[in-house]
Length: 180
View 1 (tube, rainbow, N blue to C red):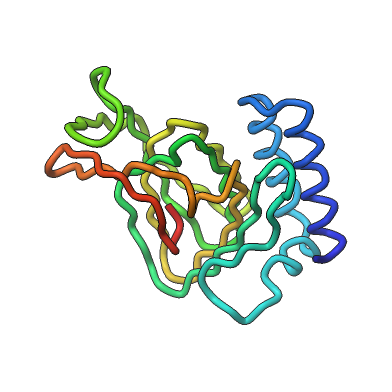
View 2: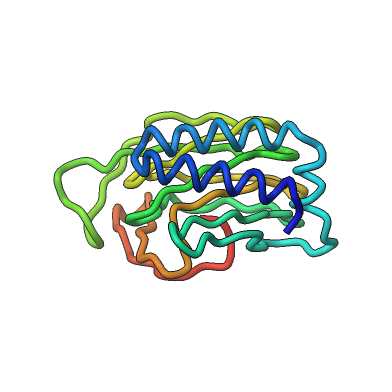
C-alpha cells in the first residue's frame, strides 16, 4: 500500500472511530473528494493495468473497505441498496449517473416494493456521493469510467436488495462482483 493510500485510510479510520454515524460518513465523502483531487493518490489507486473491481484496503478493526473500479464496459444497475452498510463513491474519470429512489409504504425486505424516483444526477470527476444505510439508488456509467468506493463493510458478505421497476418486486442479493 502506498503512502497516499495509507494517509487516506488512516484519515477514514480516525473519522469513523470518532463518528461512525452519518456525520462521519459525510466526512468520508469530503475526504474522498480531497483525495481524488490529488494526482498521486489517483495514480496509486489505479497503477495496475487490471480493469474491473480491485480491493485496495480493508480495515481489520472497523471493517470499512476501499475499492477501485476501472470499468472497460458500460453498465446500468437496477435500483439497489447496500443492506446494513453504506457506500461513498468518488468519480475519477468519465461519469456515473446516479438515480435515487424511495420505497413507498412501510414494507421492508424482499417482496412487493413500489419505488418513487427522487432525483437523478451525475457524479463527474472530482465529485463524491454518500449512499447511506437504506439509500436505494441505481448507477449508470460508460466504458472507461473509473471511480473509488469506500464501503462501511465488505458488501460481498452483506445481504442487500435489488428492485425490479417493472414488477415492483424486491429480491435479496448477497454477492456481486460488479459495483452495486
